[in-house]
Amino acid sequence: MDNFFRGLMDKKIIKIGQITFDFLDILLLTGMTVAGFLIRYVFRLIVTDDWVVFWGPWIATLKEGGFQALATDFYDYAPPFMYILYFISKLPVDPMFAYKVISSIFDYLAALVAFFLILEITKSKVRAIGVYSIFLIIPTMIANSAMWAQCDIIYVTFILISLYLIFKNRPSLAMVFYGIAFAFKLQTLFIFPLFVILWAKNKVKIQHFLWLFVMYFLGILPAWIAGRPLIDLINIYVAQGMQDAYSLSLKWSNIYQVYGTTFFIKEYEKAGIWLILGILMLLMFYMAHKKYELNAEFILLTGFFFAMVTAYFLPHMHERYGFLADILAILYAFTTVKRFYYPLIHIMLSFSAYMEYLCYDYAGPIPYYAFVEFGLIILAGIEIYFYINGKELKLSWKKEEANG
Image 1 (cartoon, helix red, strand yellow):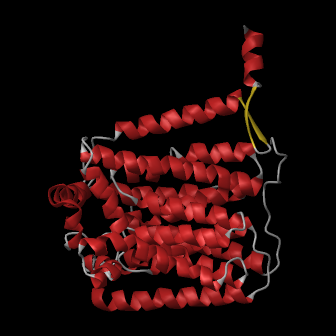
Image 2 (image 1 turned 60 degrees about the vertical axis):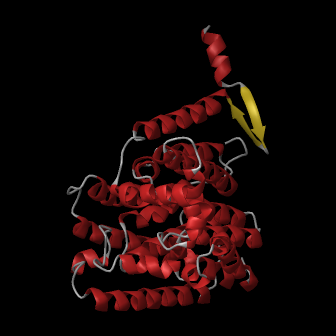
Image 3 (image 1 turned 90 degrees about the vertical axis):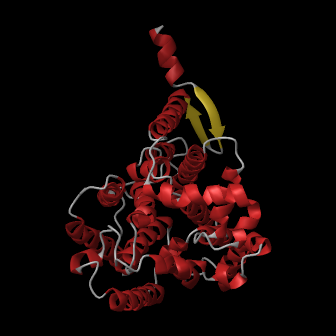
């Protein structure tokens, strides 16, 4: 029997491309898939303020008024998200449970995309399995979908698909998926400077950016047909920004936590927008001007950097707006293991902000965490600086054999 089980561990089960998965690989993937499901199942009954104030009433409105209810202005989220709520309103199950199931499905889809993305970059089966497994137990991902009943994983999944397609040298289709992400969530623009750098380095073409407008228009088209004025739909992201005018930072550890979230709100709001635009223009100019090879590791690092910088200086950032940086930090750490502390620290900051909202209690010194976040920005920025100035970016991994 001992020999039987030892032989079973090495038994080849399935082959994807040049990668062969043995019994242990499949066992781990299955175990992590089930564990991720059971963790999410535990949180299925938690009801948050967002559900009580927004999603629940919105679904009730759609259930009563049907698709034509989208013609009214009771919602300020992007229409593609509202189509999901409309679909939920037609299901003969508890709406909150259905909502959490859909978000959790995107958790698994994101994990699968991350698997193939890391496999594409490193050619390492072990790393690909590792990133899939980690994705399913990330505290912020679980809290976002299964506890909070939020939808950030949806736009992030489409961003991950976009990056995967960039690595596969399919820039037009990559921008289609980036456009889909934008149609779901304005926070997609946190890493828009990365795509500007990709254009400057001839990875994408200027006409590919038109897909952002095309996909956004296709996203609002059904709501327009339902009867909501086109100008309202075009300006829906502007309306979102107007909601949070009472605080410069909603528990996110950024610069406004240091200087005060309720001081000079109107002035800092306008100044902060111009400040981040100025910072991003300086960074994009410098990074586009320099001559260097744009590899996959650097693309992930740059995405992580811009996701942090934008949320750090932009006013009215929510607790959840570090989510994209959480995900990109994990991906980068799986290509550059020496930077394993990037996701560990950033997820700690994000989860503390989550808990302050979800638990109605003090979960950490958020103003002090703002200095930690700034430290991560500096570290990532220094790493970028060294790389683009021709200094060797010391990686802790080598491309392994197909079955490595």
